Length: 124
Image 1 (cartoon, rainbow, N blue to C red):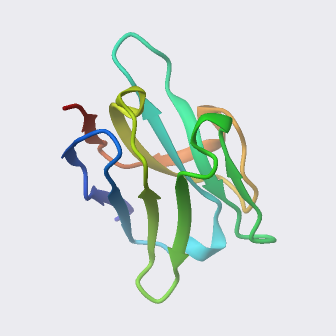
Image 2 (image 1 turned 180 degrees about the horizontal axis):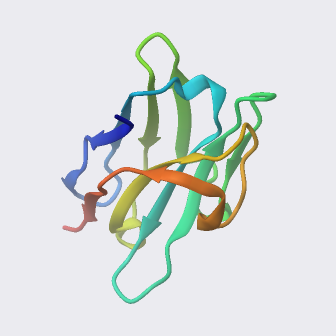
């Protein structure tokens, strides 16, 4: 059974940090590109970051560059998103997603497996 389980979300003050984890079971993550998406109330789901498995290339949306870091631990079959210098506009439900192939795609349609989502709230 394929399953993605996110953890590490919560409430943090502006400027704080969180590390999200996405643990996979039922398949091997390092064969597929893995992305983190987020969706704020009333907005479309957007890709935050992605790491490809074909060449290790990493992508970030402009608003998180220099603040967020994606990484993968193949031994643990887990992908992480380290989020530093968090801002109120980072508040959203965050989802990890596994692509159909080894390369990252920008839109949600390129991802076949999704986690349940985890809330990240940045507020003082």
